[in-house]
Amino acid sequence: MTAPTADTQRRLRRLNLMMISPLLVAVGVLIVVRDARSWLDAFILALGVVAALLTFERWTANDVFRLAIPCLLVSAGVWVYGALVAGTGTAFYGLSLVGPHIIPQLSRLRGLAAVGLVAFVAAVGATRLLLVHEDLPEGLINWVVLPAGITAVVTGLMFPNKRFYGVVKDLEEARDREAELAVVRERMRFASDLHDIQGHTLHVVKLKISLAQKLVRTDADRAEEELREIHALVADTIAQTKELAYAQRRLNLSAELENAKNLFEAAGIDVRVDREAEVDAQASELLGQVLRETTTNILRHAQAGQVRITLSKSGITILNDGAPDAPLPELSGLSTLRERVAGDGGELTVEQKDGTFLTAAAFPHLRPQGAR
Image (tube, rainbow, N blue to C red):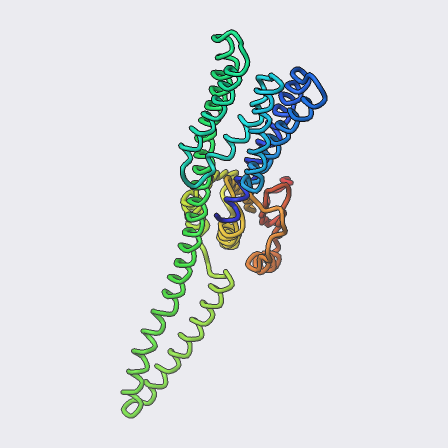
């Protein structure tokens, strides 16, 4: 399981702990106060409640098997004591929570274990009826039907619950794979750009060198001209490669915007684009570079569910959720762009707060007169 997936499941289980624990405690206290006839009864019934709470807490931590056997033995013993000694029909409370939280987590024989749990609860209640003469229909309901039925229902409900967490895991893993695939696509596009720059140049250089070799003895001036062209071509290619490596190659903002939308949607991220005005042509190229770098950073470093891109005449703002609580790694691409944006009279702002990450680039000198 990947770290983001495990973290999502932990948050969901922790939410269950905060929401359901008070209810479990309240019911447990009510049972002890109402049904305990002595301090010994209260102590033993409380043990069953504690076993249930410990099991639930370990379940929310995805570590239920650490205390599974002790909690099962204690809660089963409490039910035996309550039914055969104390005459407390609600003593199965602890067992009806401990068993259902453990059984669906078993790797095999879950169905058999569930049947065995319900059968044990019913058998203890039936033993009570054999030892103590009570009204049979009422006793059957109080000591067999209700305890076994409630245990069966709770156990049955925990199986879909386990499946729910399985679906969450599958969805998160699928999203992680989509994000990784989107990053791979971005790398492939970079490689394609590099190939476009260098592949064509190398092919042309090869042809010109062959031509210069043929002309060197027959037409020295023409050969020299070819060599000058080769030198200029290589120098231009070096410059273009450097621009590409440092995200300085001329980009089309509209194409980058469409590409960002496609990448985010492929990664399962909801993206919204707001156009407040047409971007000034002077800022379009740098804003495209900011958008490309931010898109890559979101896909690589965040677990975003939503991204909002706002375009104005003089700037762009990209806001995403899913930012990690820990400090982000050094984003060297944005650092380089900050220098370039500042060099053109603009400013690049990067903020991380409350699980959101904001990247904004603006060129104040391009804002309309009177705009703040």
